[in-house]
Image 1: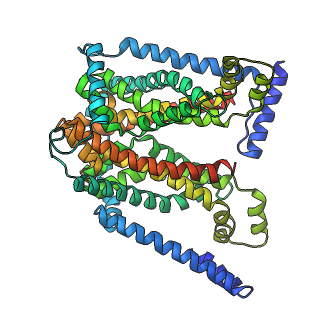
Image 2: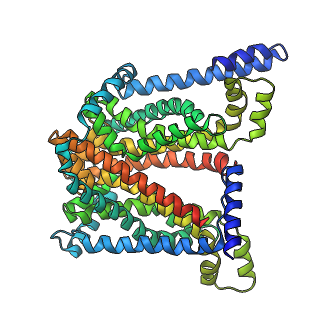
Length: 293
Length: 275
């Protein structure tokens, strides 16, 4: 029994190395892995609740208030009195939203341009192993830093403004796109690349004649998915980056004016934009990513 | 792009019109994208020259000021405690969110979901709204009623996690193979027998994989929620940052990076051994 498992593990690793993706695990190890993982997660959850500081709040009363606040936000959105307080005009909301969308556009385009060469260097089938590991390791570290910390760090380093917000969001975005792009590149049939190389094509000819035509739809749809994430991030960091935008207005409405009806209007504006983006990206994903697999 | 264009002109002799059209299309697309970029940059007042030019100075400033010093190491125990509690909150939020996530994911899916398309649509709609309400709105809303404590941060994280996890779970249940489900139905299995004998077992590896992914992303989201609700590692960072103790803030970043990468390695290992 032990011998067959070791054999199948070795085979699995060979297959994995050959195919790059497929990985097989012996049934016994697999049957064990699921309950062990679940058990660890459940135990950690229990530990969390035993040591969590709940504060001095009456939970029932707080929940009731949270629900009524939620109702005020979602069912009675208003900017003007009596419910709203006239802190914001529709123009402010509209323009702030436009500027947040613009920040996400700038971030997405910048990071797509930077990620493309990085992804080429990270792909195992196009680059050498050392370069690939260096880029992948570098990207993993960048990705591990929360976006908001990047933004705050850039805010002190280069000053408040759109530049700090864009650079902060872009760092994370570049890490994500490099990983996604290089995965798309690595899925390309090795025969195509070899055929071009054998007929004397240079590296850039391989990239622009084989890699690009084969992966452009996937790259575009990854980019659009990231655009959606960048928009969410741009709203989230808006409160701290000092670049204005809808996130800043949301933060003002919620933590300075304490007016949930105004928060509601801004939330609906965000919902409208995210629904639009999600509608497009779900379609792109279905068409280009799921079908390509 | 120059090499591509060079090879285009080289082979243009074979069929000039086709290659010229392709080159024109590419040029038009690039010009269009550049125009969009310029318009967006003007709207949000973004100066690309200034941004790129300031990167080297920003990084050298960073490495000098954010480098943890001997003094900041005294803060290490506090930072570690806050980091661990943030990580635990992320795990707990994911696990608790997975319970309604799986239940609603089953009921709302096309493969093993309920008969009524209206109910499935409702589940998807609610998931979409919950997910897309900005994190700032959730955090500020809960802060008003639950005040500043760790539980508030946990609740905000839980609510954003439910929405996202439900999206992933619905996709997972939609994509499971219908063969085993049909086989069970045709030999007379009840609805719940189909769910527990075919639906969940077929999806379990994916569900676990999404949960592990969620734990990873939640640690990053927890930082932002911490900033808003005054809890966890985000709050520690903010205290150091606002009091200009950048060396300690840098230590927070270093500890977060190590923790996230550690969790990523562990969950990759767990994920691989489940497939």
